[in-house]
Length: 166
Image (cartoon, rainbow, N blue to C red; front, side):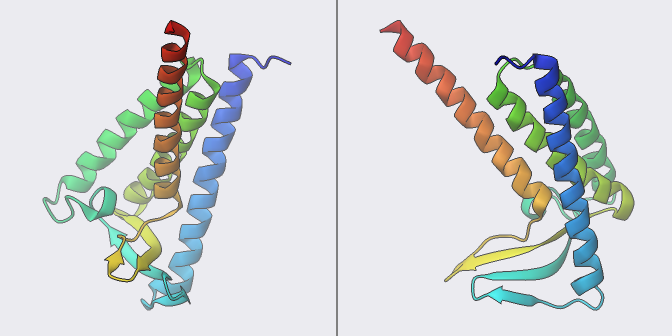
């Protein structure tokens, strides 16, 4: 059975909407559970829930750089989200549509925070021995998964082209 590109685009939008919904629900839960008063909840020895307001971009980069930075980041994220949406609607690869859906859902989840709070709510804290990953959220995870899908899609296309040349 062949699924039309339009149907795949709609499925992609539903995936993005699901990611935004789960992201916002988990952030609302985090805000109500351990942001006020701030406290750390240890789930496992290597996994905590922590209250972090991220006014920068990934992993807190550019935080505190300028008072205008949240506005600049918000504007750029909106523009990038529009580009991702157009790309999702016109992409022909199923895996690329999936990748773009995850990235778009994550981007929208974080832009909602920036518009509503001026910062992104991060609360997932993972650490192993001396390695401590910066706090992140469901939207960040979706973006990371989407980028991995994107890279796999490109690697697979190049592999297929390389194999067909032989």
